Image (cartoon, rainbow, N blue to C red; front, side):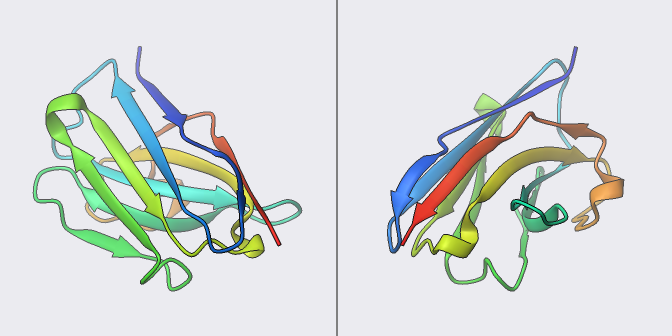
Length: 123
């Protein structure tokens, strides 16, 4: 059974940082792109960042560039999202996902999803 389990969310003040983790189990994700998406209240889920599993190449949404860093530990089947300079508009449920498509930024191309972790940024 494939599982993606996110952790690390919470409440932080504006300007603060959080590090999200996503632990993958149930199959090998070699060759898969791992992504982070987020869904703010009343809004559509949107792409935040992705990393190729094999080469570690990354891609970011414009809103994440310069503030968020995605990384992975292949040995532990874990992906991270370091988020700095957080703002209230970053408040959302953050989802980890896995795609067999290289460097996908499209939600529909992701095959596996975690249940999400809440990030709340207070002003």
